[in-house]
Length: 255
Image (tube, rainbow, N blue to C red; front, side, top):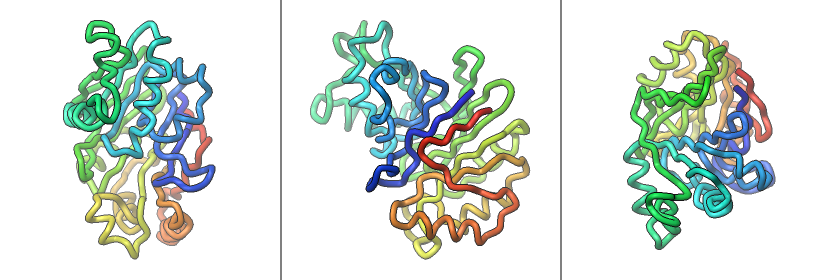
């Protein structure tokens, strides 16, 4: 499997500040932030599945526009995989005919442009030889992490999360884990804000990394623009043996 980083910023401001979106091979999105908007139109038509970690705007901003752009050109509905709680939020606050049309009912409910597929923690969704599993995470709204498994290797994306023992246990149960994409949204001097918003800061990230017993490459995502260099300097000063690096828009991870 191949994961291409379309966006991994914790905010906007500049040509490299696209919010969270990862393209898996050429037909699956993990989250659907502003980075999706940089894809060519034909690439948008190729996307068949979107897996959402949670319903915050920076992770779903392009979803309504994606469906509007290609919905009537597809032979089958775009499938949006998310927890029942996230689906409820999207129906109530986005696809509610006020903010955006309900594309799960256009042109009609028997032939929609989009369909929601609920996922539960631990559930494995198989797409050909690929497997995507929802893992536990903790944020201010219901959320999940995801494990992507090619059969030859695995990748975990934490989504937005605070310190989560259950996620650490799930990561340690993956001996074939090659890549861990994990957020660090705030610098250590904003630890109070990180705790209140259920994000990570460098000291919290480093505490997690000391508990990880597998040896993936660690990629840091969701850094807040303007604080990104400070956050990475604090992470690097922690001298983790896993040598975390900053994830960049355009990166390609194979596993």
